[in-house]
Length: 199
Image (cartoon, rainbow, N blue to C red; front, side, top):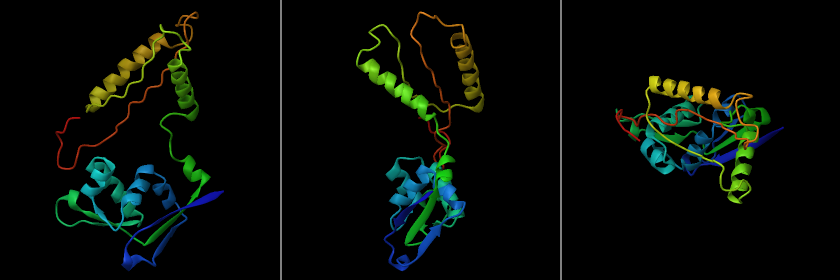
């Protein structure tokens, strides 16, 4: 089974040009950020304009624009040495993409759907007072720029804690059952031309 997604761009010179994608290029367009870039592209935007509109760092925007250009969906005008000012233009007046269920399946989930459901349910129940007032519950989202060595050390130390508290038989059978799901993943690159930015 397949479905179609379509975008139309306000460029008179390309008004009648239709780009139909029914091959492996659809996998490239299945990335949500790439599709969002196309949605806001209009008649064309610079790397900086896209970055500011989507609140995504410019180095990440440029990476995805280059991937879109590789499959012929956009044209990237590389005028000058400042890649922040490079312009991206749609390659056709209409882009039509056939998506199959297998294409959607190839997008990896950060967390399995059943795990997300369990955590959401637990937070709803906690808010309603199901667990009383003495249980522990936390949800953290932290960001830092780490070296490869620091990230590896963090991972090792976290695994030690998990092995201490979560292996079978280590907990307290009379206690509340807790779930823990941790994700340590790169979320951004340094901005273009700025390797010292701290967030």
